[in-house]
Length: 333
Image 1 (cartoon, rainbow, N blue to C red):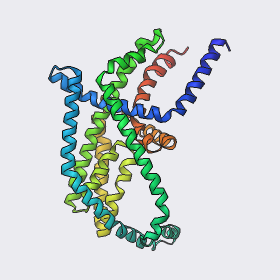
Image 2: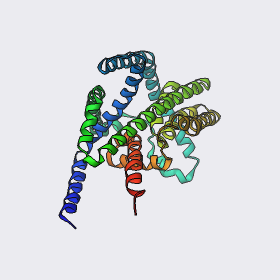
Image 3: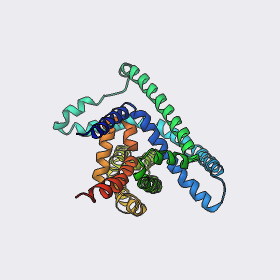
Image 4: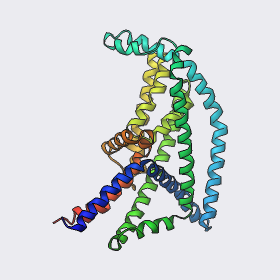
């Protein structure tokens, strides 16, 4: 091995170790990149209609998002708070119903014993330290969200300067290819975010309407969870369906079956019609790739890794197609 090759290998090893040590910083930065791309999509659409400076367009977009957030907060949050309180009242009934079903199955005796008979302060007190740890984790998450938002605004304010830094750090023979890769990653990520946002909103509205027609309690809360977890394909929709199905089980098994059919219909509509149509011009990840990315980053980085697994997979897939396949594998002799 030549000295140049040895130096390259050592450099890659050092970069890999450094990246692992700074994985949370890189995760925050990538989250900011995803959010800045979402802002950039709105900025470009606004500037196509109104020729204004980018800084002014960013300000208008932020004001618009704040107004929409305030309206949504005023319309939905009071109802959500009431439904969360109702969830605390309904939860013991759901557990009791599950225990009565499990008690009829001898093979599930161990599972039955793991479900508490009732909630009491004596049983809650031992987890006090865990709740304090959770509060600390929530504060850390809030700080990370603030940092992501600030970085995203700075990136969206002047993306070209940051793009030039990345291109300048690339060896001269590959700068043109890096420029094309960045453009393709931006287009793919922007298309994916737009498509998934429309898909999640549609799932939320259809689920809310369907559960309301079936007169299921906590319809708004269940629909909101289903809509948000649409951003976590494969795992998310199935997990989100547990809440409305469990609540419907309290009333009757027939109602539970109706809710199950409703959720299956909406999930299939989203997975096989809505999402493919919305993402036909973007990168449409295979379910196996999406699931493996979620499991891998979830094991390494926890919930933040699961949330950012899909946009990161979109970027990696574009990079693989443009660099590994076209520039290396296709030219392999």
